Length: 580
Image 1 (cartoon, rainbow, N blue to C red):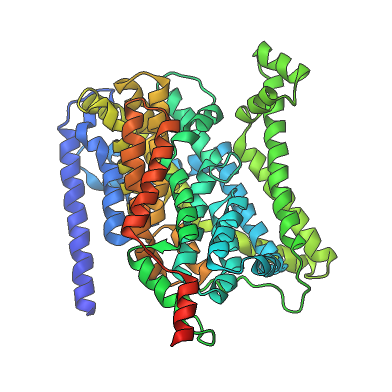
Image 2 (image 1 turned 90 degrees about the vertical axis):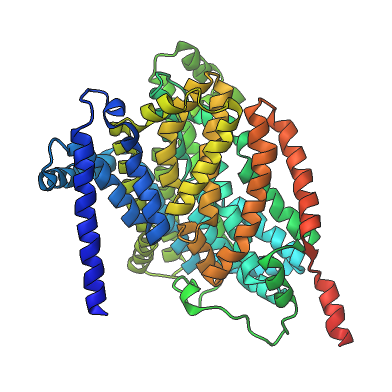
């Protein structure tokens, strides 16, 4: 066994050396020039392609991104056939690239606010706020229909972060669903299908900073200064998958129709006897986060910190944009802020000009302080224990920071290699204009499925998509639809991926077997994505307005559910048990 492992390592090392030598040979013999897109040609696609392929093979997101960045830096560092020298320079450049990404104030703000929100989640759970909400919901959600609708409603309320959504909603609704004989797989699907799709389109979330940043940078690459937040708002109606999957949850819950593997697990769950315990694997249970023993449960221990985060973020958003506008040179906006600061236009302009990463960091810091004070003043924890739990919550988000840094670094390397310019040159005029939004959506889905990260996918694709869309069809409406394809495709692929952090957290939060969760939900995700393409992105490519496409897509989705599915009725199962 040890010999086989050594042989494998040797083969991998030898293959890597040969591959780097061949790559060096190709680059050295490439035509010289200042334009990297011309110099490297099709090789500019190699770093993202390596990252995607390795993700499929290894299922390791961090390793795949790391190697993708290294390959890109190696290509930039090649001057001759000395691969050792090139590899050393690539490694050093890689360190500089990652530090540069971390030092960027915007990027630092995004990572810090994610960490702080992780701390707030931990505090809310430890204070018993999550458990109190679960008990409150259990009084009102007394049927499978109501329980599933309640689950989605709670997910919509926790719109600001997909991790928060998965880790709060799952534990809250799990005992309610178990009591009503709804399968853990269905609960995991509802939680997972609400988490990222909501956070991705919410105007206040841990996602919006990255999304706005990528949009702004993408338009800068074609020489346009735009409001990233303004463009983001315009993409929302075209986020077809996000919108349709949220509506699909309602349709499935109200009709009780299921298909595929989900139908089988739901039928089995309905037939479970009251005294029979729900089976779950300990390794997939999110047991580390439980309320402190012996405390009095109160829903305010959840409502107050979360409300502080939401309201604080709104105020911080507004104040950030307000001060930015007053410190700028646009006299029309300055006049608007001075005369009608709280008008609809005034609020919209302030939100558009705000620094999302700083605002969310400020709100998360305030919510953290409130949560710690509540824990201490109620004598639930000492201040040392509260701070320790707060820091413990941050640890669950550290992996996200690593992924973000590597994804940003890969985006930087892609920019240095001129990948976007190469793709624009190759694809301009080579594909039908109407199919580009669909192509981008599918490409985003494949990348995010392979890497398990929406953030990384957005970072890879957005710098390529906006220049390409503008070159193919220089109309703002078309570019917005294509931009939506990146943001939505990334979420769809991430939703299906077994290596996605949100998918894993949804399994953990609901104590559902992870593979069972992936196998049951992927059928629903693909079903909705197919409708989003056929009745959303293809028509949008022809210029058909979203307010025509979405209603038609909903009707088709309902008909498809009726044709493919079968009703798993709680009442009918009860009657069958009584008859037996």
